[in-house]
Length: 297
Image 1 (tube, rainbow, N blue to C red):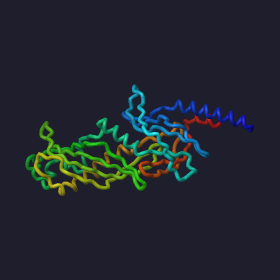
Image 2 (cartoon, rainbow, N blue to C red):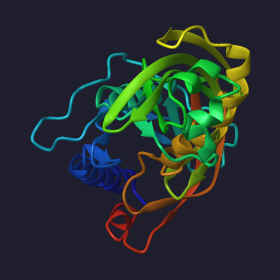
Image 3 (tube, helix red, strand yellow):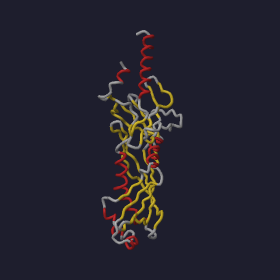
Image 4 (cartoon, rainbow, N blue to C red):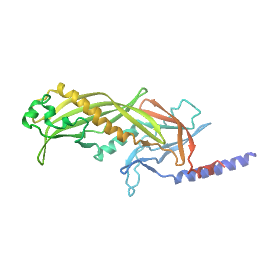
């Protein structure tokens, strides 16, 4: 094929691709409250074997009447971390992406809930605490209870070469129920360290977290001093059977990755590095993807 014909065909293909990219949505809905900002930033990255695009990648409040915020502050050129050059797609996610989601949900007051159903229901009555906090049972004998859980700050996600994890600071207030009144009697501050196991499901990054360690201290009490060493095993049980399953239910829904509509990831692998992770994958057309073939004809 003559050089002029090749140049003309490439120019035409690039023009079509540019038009297609301009038509793509600027945000990907995650749920009723949040979206992923997939606005393109910086120039296209070209190499001998690939074309790279950078997107904003941070979480924003989902509000169709408000223009998408420009949350991309750093003009970074993050290298793709894929070690297998045969993979068709590489997506790099900085831990700032996850921390933006954490801050958004925290500001929207989604990190607060009342625990009134647990596997061991005896712990929701003061009788179940009579040997752990005797003064609680003495002051409120056979009273029902609940736990008022709130985060005092957004969880902090940390990614290293070995693992991805999060540190969460939680206030657990013990409430006693008396007729139509809720009486807060004590508050325990928890610092929970958890490690995440990540995988790809469809075009979503999903995960589960497990407890590594936690520290606890008495923040305040209306029933005198508490013996924290007696309370610690109970709190450990609550974290394992209540807090972590609650968090994993949300994490299992997954984070949508910025994949062009009409493609699906295949044979994906996750590579961790300092402060970021990469998803390296092959891709396949979905049944609905007819439009993209227009660029390769």
